[in-house]
Image 1 (cartoon, rainbow, N blue to C red):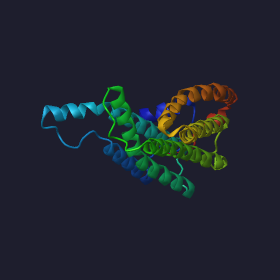
Image 2: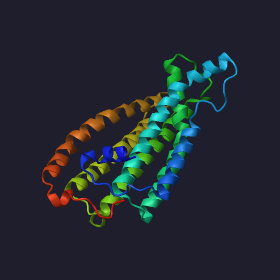
Image 3: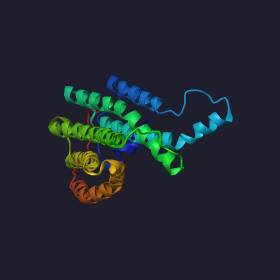
Image 4: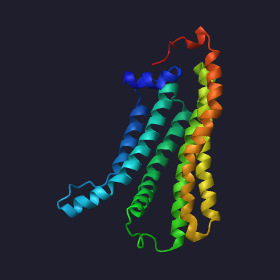
Amino acid sequence: MHALHEHIAKDGFRLRGTAMSRLDAFSDIVFGFAITLIVVSLEVPRTYDQLHALLAGFPAFAICFLFLFSLWWAHFRFFRRYGLHDAGTIALNCALLFMVLFYVYPLKFLFTLFIGQLLGHQSANVFSNDNQIRELMLIYGAGFMAVYLLFAALYWNAWRQRLHLRLNPLELALTVSSIGNYAGLGCIGLLSIVLAFLLPVHDAGYAGYFFWSVGLWKFLHSSITGRRVRAARALLTAGDRAALPHAG
């Protein structure tokens, strides 16, 4: 755990929530349950055909697992950075966990379908009409948007309490950067919803390719905010770097 804390703090952000809380424990249980929901199978295969079918579902499971792990890591880093347990943080955290659980099945369904198409598996019986393809993209886009906008809201709530948290200039810059990053990711989800609405119903699935713009957004955002963060780090005084007596 100490190594994880050092990794999170390597950007200079002083950690205020290094102790495990009941909110952390509850959140970890929910993330663990979400991962349980995406497992390929709960039963040990009894024939090779069953094993083959299980292995065919492994790539989709791996993608979903990595995505949920990235959400857990973002959640873990937020609570280690700020250590907040106010009513606003608890409400936003509960909404986030609810959306994670909601998001699990559309996430697994979509990537199982996507991997199946890459492997040449037929998906003719998956959808009974083209409107269901559009509905799937709307559900996935809405879940993606909600999850990342809730992360942005958590960071905004932390920024709102910047005086109480005694955030130094670097920590303020990193907080604002995180708000922008997650808000931008949420907007990608929103734009995918718009595309799914605007495209012809039989082409609505192409809205999913818009999520490849996540990499472009990450690059642009880091390029823009990186300069501000470096400038804030250069202006830090010894007092700004002092350890927080109440951190724990």
